[in-house]
Length: 382
Image 1: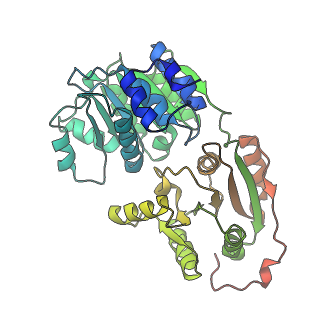
Image 2: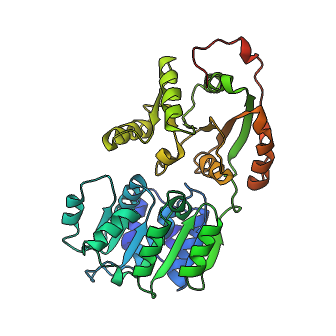
Image 3: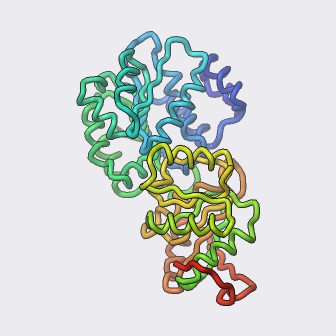
């Protein structure tokens, strides 16, 4: 199947052709015809990096009436970075659509600039929940004209504590709206929102529910707590072309691991909550441009960071919530490329491996180093 067979408008097809789009991904092939041909709500379960933005963005653009100067479509995203990325993608897809305006509103930026952008009413708004509610309460955004509502990475929004904000927004949009919810997993909270706020919704699953990407190899190393950093260094040494994210449990651990990697000569940097927005943007830009090989981050700090070419995801610690493992590992092995999810676990955590294997329906390989790590000296241990 090609995009030309999906009944999209010519001005959209010409724009995505310039972007090199030829054949839709599996999620696009299922979601785009559904949204164009059906009138019911939709829950789409798909991993990050499968082409979700085009899956909902292209049909929404196709159905928006550019002659009407009112907000017709709202896309909610969990983070500033994802919000900006979605808005940029939609702008690229609609390059040849005359009179269409898209505005992104999100926290972490001076609200006065966004207020000015809203002086001329857009047809599409991409927003983070908190900033959207702020602008609604200021009377700057009217949700009463919304025809299409998209909740992107809905499970991430719930993990970040946006449940009440999402419910507030859903209650303020018209009952006649069409709602499309995208999520990598289907926890009870997502099912409850779908049941309460969506009408006769269909469910489309791309891949297996709660499963990791098929292109990802899952391996783990068992380590004593004091040797965890040594194991990390050995993993990196064995993979000189590594380009990945190292997930740590706390901000402090993130700083310490990144600092010691840099001191030991590795091309690394940290992403955590103590950084200013300007510092965060700088680190993320360097990582996207591959000027940094290893990004050490907490789960919260890494949300919204969407990079397709990661070779490795390294779990310096296993997450407390097993579903977060799926989010982490799903960041590699995208766009038909191979990826590796590596976990460094304490001997007392070995029981968690079986839980992970049951959830992702994959086997985690227990790798061992030939050299006994206790003979390797280091100035740092965690």
